[in-house]
Figure (tube, rainbow, N blue to C red):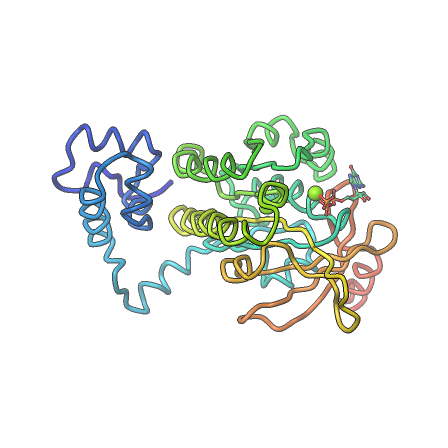
Length: 327
Ligand code: GTP
Ligand code: MG
C-alpha cells in the first residue's frame, strides 16, 4: 500500500478530500506525480487549487529535486516479477520490473496474450519465488482475449490454487480508446485499494487503430496514446507496480531491405517503455524473444515455449543448462 495519505496535507478541507478520494487519489505519492491540469480534470477542482495541492504534495515528498541516494533508495524497492521462463527473466535483468513499463510486441499468435496470462498468475507468487505477494493483477482487455479457463490451467500446472489465483485478477474490458483512458485513470484508486502490483494492457493500440484512420488523425491519436502511457508510468512509480503493454506490428509495404515490420504506435511507445521485447513465432510453441530499441540494454535474444504452465523455457535449453550446472 502507498505510504502518506492525502489527509496529511496541511489545509486540505473535507470537500477537497472528498473530491480527491472520488477521483481515486488517496496518497500523497499519487498526488505528487500528477500535473495540476490532469488533477483538475480528474477532480473538478480549479487549476489554481490543484497547483497548490501538487506543490504541497511534492514538497512533502521532496520530489522537486532529489539527491542520488534518495533515488537509489526508491530504486531499491523495485521488484522483479518472474515471467515463468528463466530465459526471458534473464533477458529482462531478472524479470518484469516495477516502476516501469515493459512492452511486448509481435505479430498475431506470437504469445503476447499468453505471457500476460502467465504474469497474472506469477505476480501472486511469494517474493522468494519471483512474485510480489500479497498482490493482485489488473488485466485491461481491449481485445476480448482474456480467458479465465487458461488462467486456471496455468495455476494448476504450477501447483497453485486456481480459485485463489482467479480471485486476485481483476479484469476490465476496454471498449474504446476513451474507455481505456478512463480505466487507466480509475486505476489510481483501484491500485491503492486492491494492492495491484501488475497492470496488463492487452493491447495498448488495438482500440486506437480503427478509431483514428488517416494521417490527419495521427497527431490526436499520438497525444492520447502518450497521455495513457505517461499515466501508466505514473501509476507504476506511485505504487511500485509493474506495467506490461502489448503491441502489434505493422508491415510497411515497399521496404525491401531490412525488417519491413515495425511496432504500431510510433515513437511514443519507445519513449515510455523501458523494455521492449519483440516476439517471433517458431515451431511447437517455441517463440523467440528479442530485446530491442533500448538505450540501457544491449540487443539480445532468447527462446520461450508456450505450454500448460503458460510460458516456460523450452526443453532443450533446460537440458543444456542442467548439463552446464552439473545437475
Ligand atoms: P494476437 O493477440 O493475435 O496479436 O496474438 P498474441 O501474440 O496475443 O498470441 P497469443 O498469446 O494468443 O498466442 C497464441 C498462441 O498460443 C497460439 O498460436 C497457440 O499456439 C498458443 N495457445 C493459445 N492458447 C493456448 C493454450 O491454452 N494452451 C497452449 N498450450 N497453447 C495455447
Ligand atoms: Mg493477443
